[in-house]
Length: 285
Image (cartoon, rainbow, N blue to C red):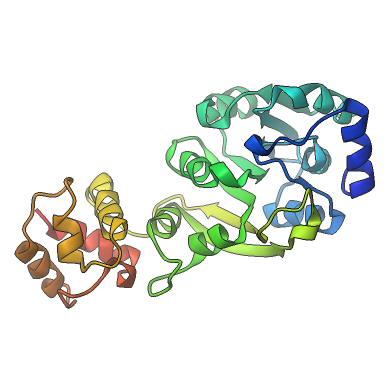
């Protein structure tokens, strides 16, 4: 039975192992059973699923995942937590703990070895300092992933979900929405963690598309255009694009392409949808 969903038991485990919370790994332990159950429910994990967990910490959510899933692999970077996890997960025979950096881990190989290459589900309470690189690795890395349900900083979750015209809309929004349908499924206040973070958190569920929602001839070119547009988001698109070394087109060529799309040459990147960025990337030389 999962026992770590409260502060008292978490403190007992940390004290038993003399474990110091380490800021460099962004360690904030979730101590709210309601939130833990909500994450498992929104992830859609069942006994048919293989789950990859990133950053299990002392095994709090891992216990819940072991009880919900067929099998769990938990990747933990902090070697000092490995003996703690051996203790807290000792009652479960369907979990494997890997001491590794997730950004250097071959997720495709794990899926192949543990799940026959079939799509896996990812569930995690992500350290805030590596949220974006981890999300992009999961989406772009080519591993067979069905869904991603993660706890992240609330501001980042809002950025992933938002659309054109919002101050939070940017390159991350477009990248995530190209690969997955994004939905914030829970807001989590700081008092649900130990120690308390300085910012609010949110759980976001990303359901990966089998086929991206927009068709584009050159995916890399589209993302270069998106990065150029938001690297200097105060500039109009003709100025932002021609100021980026990745493009050799002139301001007039960018303006002509925008006019062909029925857009003003004074438009900024924050006003364009994903489909409009795809179209613009195909019109530019």
